[in-house]
Each structure stands twice: as C-alpha cells, then as structure tokens.
Image (cartoon, rainbow, N blue to C red; front, side, top):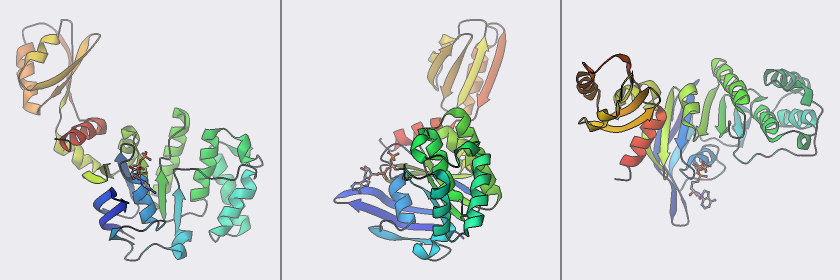
Length: 299
Ligand SMILES: Nc1ncnc2c1ncn2[C@@H]1O[C@H](COP(=O)(O)OP(=O)(O)OP(=O)(O)O)[C@@H](O)[C@H]1O
C-alpha cells in the first residue's frame, strides 16, 4: 500500500505551488510534511486525495489512482474545518460514518470509544456550535478516523489545541499507527513532526528541500549544538574559529558550531580557565535543520 508521488507539479495560473515533487510513503508509517505557510502542503494533500488534478506528474496508492471508490479507506482532516454547527455531535458523526460504509450501530460504538479516548464523552449530544474551537477540532478528527481508514491525511491536526490536548491527539495518532494506519500529516511546528514521524519531507516554495528518515537526517547533520555551563564568563567562545553563534543564558551558553571537531578546540580553550559543569554536544533539532536547509535554498 505504498503512496507514490512521481514528479508532481501544480500550477495556479503562472504560479507553481508544488514543483516536481517525488515521494514514496510506506504503509503503516507516520510521514510528516513540513514547511512554512504557503510551502505547498495543503495543495499536495488535495492532489493526493484527487480533489484537484496535478498539472503534471502522477500519484498512485498501491499502484492505482485514489478516487471516490476508495473513500471508505481514506480519512482526511482538512485544513478548513467543516462540521455542521447546528447538528449534534452524535447525529453528525454517525451520519458521516454511514457515508463511509459503516453500519449505524458500529458508528455509534466507535464514536463513543473515540469520545472517551479524546476525553470528551460529555459532547455526544451537544451541538457542534456549543463546543470550543479545540473541542470542535477533536470532533472533526473523529470524523476522519471513525471508519478506521487505512490512509489518514491530517492537515495541521494540532493547530489551535492547547498543550494537554496536543498530547491527547498525538497519543491517538500513535495508537492509530500501531493499529496499522498509514498517516500523513502536515505541520509547521517542527517539534510535532520530530516526536511523531519516522520519515518526513520539508517543502519550501513548493520544492522539496529535504526528505528522508528523521534519524538518518539528524545523524547526517552531525552534532552542531554545544551546551557549556561554567562558573566564569564564557562569552569569549564567540571568538573561536568555527563558532557560528553563541546564545548566553544564566550560567552557560548555547553555541552553534560548524562541525563536531570545533567542540574540541573549544574544550582546549576552556581547560585551565576553571570548573566546567557541563559540556554537551547535542543533536540538531529539526528546527535547526530547517533553518539551515531553508537558508541554503535562498543562497
Ligand atoms: N486555488 C488556488 N489558487 C491560487 N493559488 C493557490 C490556490 N491554492 C493554493 N494556492 C497557492 O499555492 C501556494 C501553496 O499553498 P498551500 O495551501 O498548499 O500551502 P501550505 O503549505 O498548506 O500553507 P499553510 O501552512 O499556510 O496552510 C500558496 O502560495 C497559495 O497561495
């Protein structure tokens, strides 16, 4: 059940929103789409779901185009949320479940399970308009998963949620993956992608600027963050060759260095100056990697 995008482009008028994007998304994986506003994430999702046609290139799932006949196998949380405000949660979600081929009873049972799992059982018979924005989002999430899709596409699933609810939803996504769902989601919050995805793609202005396995990407970037804590003024490390940036905080500094070897020069310079409480080389965060890659593509 591989999802395959081959040389996919989308133009609106003369503007290229997605530019020759090729990707392979393996089944039972969580795949992250990263990119700033306007990078082309939503446009890519719409093409995958066959809601809009690519200008060129092809998209297949298990060797076939996705069309309405596969809608029972697919779940989609669109960026623009769209529930009926006047309908009660139960009426609406059971109806949507039935549209996706479920028996009424099964949809009712599944809905109750999901409301419990997302910690909102009290909303079963509430009208959607009575719910807060974050809780409406949970209901919309349930509408995307109630029929147990094989492929789940989530456009910015965590936007507008408080930190506790972000965790609740993240756990739900992890459970769905364990149950065998292939999940593709977008976010411009690097930490969400970092915590959930095995594989990811970074888009900028419609172009892929990075793609691959998260662990391998991080390893290939090397450890370029160095944290030092000492009882004396560390601002002089700024002057050492290979140090790009130094951020000072009480009791220590965070340094960005060009490569791991620079850390040894810094250590040499520190020795003899006094007591060092911490000297730690850290993996780059996805945010660091994004900033570096995004910068490169402007050069
Ligand atoms: N129907 C359309 N007509 C014209 N331009 C469009 C259309 N849809 C998208 N675009 C443009 O394509 C680009 C990519 O938009 P898209 O919504 O895919 O980005 P995104 O990565 O999802 O951004 P965001 O994080 O803000 O949702 C944007 O510049 C947008 O203005």
